[in-house]
Amino acid sequence: MIPVFLIRHVLGTRGVAEMFGIEDSYRYALWAMWPGEAWGQAALILLVWVHGCIGLHFWLEARPWYRRSQWLWYTLAVLIPTLAYAGFAEAGRRSRLVEDGFQNPFTAEQYATIQTVFAASALAYWAVLATAGAVLAGFLIAARFRARFTIAYDNGPTVVAPLGTTVLDVSRTHRIPHASVCGGRSRCSTCRVRVIEGLAQLPPPSETEAQVLRRVGAPANVRLACQLRPTSNLRISTLLPADRGAASGAVADKYLWGVEQEVTILFCDLRGFTRMSEGRLSFDVVFLLNQFLGRMAEAIEDSGGFVDKFMGDGIMAIFGIDGTPAEAAAQGIAAARAMGGVLESLNQSLRDDLGEPLSMGIGLHSGTAILGRIGAAHRNEAFARLTALGETVNIASRLEGETKALGVQAAVSARCMDLSGLLPGEKVSALAVPIRGLSVPIDIFTAVRATDLPAPVA
Ligand code: FES
Image 1 (cartoon, rainbow, N blue to C red):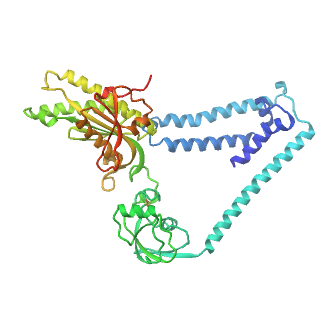
Image 2 (cartoon, rainbow, N blue to C red; image 1 turned 120 degrees about the vertical axis):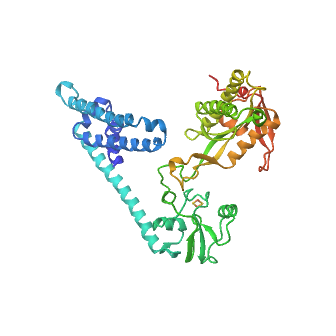
Image 3 (cartoon, helix red, strand yellow; image 1 turned 135 degrees about the vertical axis):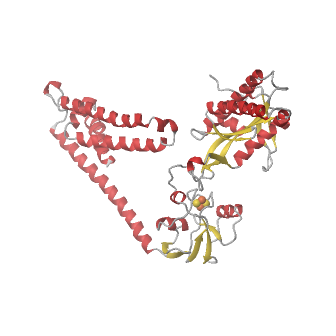
């Protein structure tokens, strides 16, 4: 209905200005709308407002600050249109009072013309809509008569589908539970099925499908349901349990089944801790470690990061769970700088206690990773912590390892530095290092002290 109301509004304001030279001022708009058009235009604004609010709500609902202040946004969502309508009603009422002095700007002929234009535009709109509906109905009817195939689900129903449909779409259409974590983008392999009958008649896998199947070491009779478009009848069995959340793709917590996301990963490790703890009381060691890890975690969180885990004397952190990849990279570098400062102040405060100052290595890399709640399938979701997996994580970890060999405190991948928009500066060195598992060396920037990493220009 939005276009119906919108067409009348645009024609009644901009349209009459173009056609008859009538000034489409706010006073004119009020006069023209009140009272006959007022309900329609109020409905238009309400429709748009509600659509916008729903969109914003679903966009922001996962953000903690939004959840905390939801009552405020709900109040504003109701209050703003209510007050606006009250003002509109009062202004509209006044516009029709004689003392307001606004004169009807139309001649009788102009008025008749604009009414004809209104009627014609409404007719044209409904005609376009009816044509689109007829085309859609035509497609649906044609689909019914298209060549078909049947899929027999092992221990399940046998269903019929038109040629050209993927097996996953058939499952979805017939509400047959079928895991599809990546939503059918050939990224996760959770939709894979074993073909029990009809394998020989199937079209061969595309290169993308074959690649995924190779990665999971699938035998020849296993195919990806999201890529497989059968041309003849077949019998299949799904291989992974189809949890309701994964099957529908609509989950309350989007990380429950893993989400591929562009993030920045930071690894930090305390150097020489084993040597340092020799000869110390265990309580003393725990105290020292907690001082280090606690202060570093604070620096990470203050910079906008999320501490994924503590690993002995090391930390892994994720940046970019909320926010853009560029913000994530800048936050990661800011965290590394802050951690460098924290280490210096820790060494100052503990200098009488430490034989030698604490030292550490930090690795930072940006790229796509799978964020998910590992263990959520078997335990309460609340106990399953968010973590990141994938090549980006491995590279960040290896860069942290490289800092030791390079004798530096921080190693930041060029991708992370580029994304952050920061200029490396003179105290930072550029080099390429080979990384185990990668065929080509990776460009990085290193800093002897993490505090030498670039800071945003104020
Ligand atoms: S749904 Fe992910 S690969 Fe098919």
